[in-house]
Length: 98
Image (cartoon, rainbow, N blue to C red; front, top):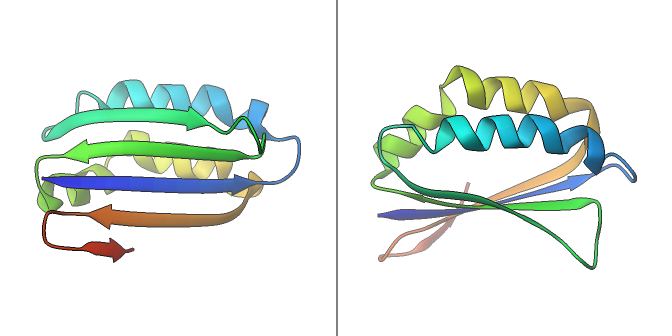
């Protein structure tokens, strides 16, 4: 099992433009093979930060998710609004920054 914490820091005031594409990606991702959980947390202290918490059966399932059309569409839809991105993969063995 692999847990993914994905944090996107957005340009000020752009969260509203990112939310609809995020929800489309979340709905589709929950149907991906190997997806156990996929949720979005919106920061109450920083309106320009989105944190995705995902649980995957395996690294192979996560890697396959990165190649899906809905994931690529999500990344393209928010590309102009992202200031920085951080991915952390957590497994029983280690925490890995991606």
